[in-house]
Amino acid sequence: MKMEIFGPLLLSLIAGLSTLIGGLFIFIKFKNINKFIVISLSFSISIMILISIFDLLPNSINNMTNYYGIYYGILLTILTFILGYLTIYLIANKINSESSLYKIGILSMISLMLHNFPEGIAVFMSSYVNIRVGYKLFLAIILHNIPEGISIAVPLYYSGRSRGIALKYTFISGVAEPIGALLSYIFLKKYINNTMISFILVFVSGLMMSLSINEIYKEIKKYNLINYSYIGYVVGIVIFFILSFIL
Image 1 (tube, rainbow, N blue to C red):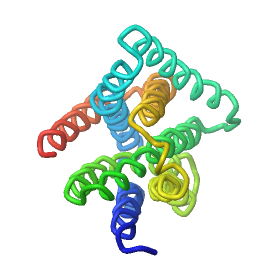
Image 2 (cartoon, rainbow, N blue to C red):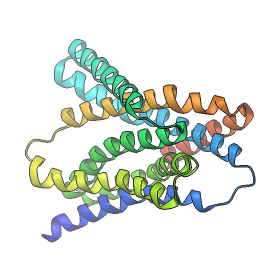
Image 3 (cartoon, helix red, strand yellow):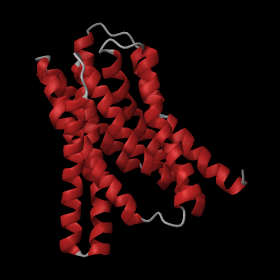
Image 4 (cartoon, one colour):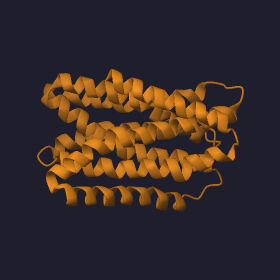
């Protein structure tokens, strides 16, 4: 492998697998499991919604309106977002499981896997062109991937699955990042552009919004621990904006 692509691929691999750090929370024993689940789920909602609103949508809308014009750019953004929103809704109805936590874990894995794929492309391409820019993006993605790992592993583990299964699905989500990087180098280097990535990210934001509203929020309400959900929301908001300010 050429040295000029080894560095960018390594960065995307480490960034993707940092998702497993969040998965390690399943090894911590908590006195009240229900309270921890509610805090974790509400924390996941904060992270997913804020990532969608502040990270995925603004740049994507800007790229699409610049390329297609304001009218068609906004229209395509809305349609792509709706498609993502409905996709996770349809997938949820296809997952047959007695455990709603299991469903949330699987849907989180799917959403974040699709999210990590273009992230891998972004890390690789930016590092390939300018390694300093790549390092900054690499650090930002690592810090965001940790809470994403929590949103996959915690619901899967507490749905009755083993730690191995929970970490396996967390790994699958994270490994989508270096796969995206590798494929971008092999097949897409000549064709990938900001507009294509923007379509993917708007679609993913629709997935995350649908997952947060239609699945995770409904699950939180079942526990009747509303005060603890506020803790998760606030912690997620604070961490997100601290990271955004630092990076």
